[in-house]
Image (cartoon, rainbow, N blue to C red; front, top):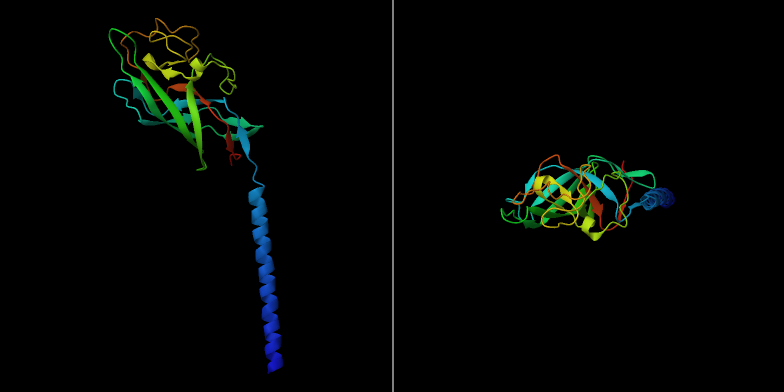
Length: 211
């Protein structure tokens, strides 16, 4: 009887050892797989083309109002797609100037704080509205002036980098040069749903490849 118990205990011990070895091996493989997931860096000053999902107007917009935009053109890092078209970018209003009949047109300052990829992954970002001079949507805008970086929505939904008397700078939509004369004094900043514009990253973002 004692010998049988010893044999049984020996079998149980060997089985437990095998189970532990398999479990440890599995955990090791999972850990290695997790560690090997590559990250790709989208550099600071990268321009991302967005489309407004909901309208804004300086007539009733308030600081803190949230809005969303959809990525129009995919973004790649080292040839790998990290931000596909259809990703959702969240932003909010940081400053509003109401239009005045006797002075300047209305304007809206905004910032961008996060981006949600279609697979559900969410990344915090810091992004600014930026004027466009008609360059490619995926172009890196390094070296652009702070006036261009600190663009804002102005009358007729235009995006202007730096304001002079309510309307001067570089405007999106293929328009070049001064916006003076295109924006009337006293005109509210009206940004309709579907309006396209460029956002520029204020800092780099580490992302996984889109799957």
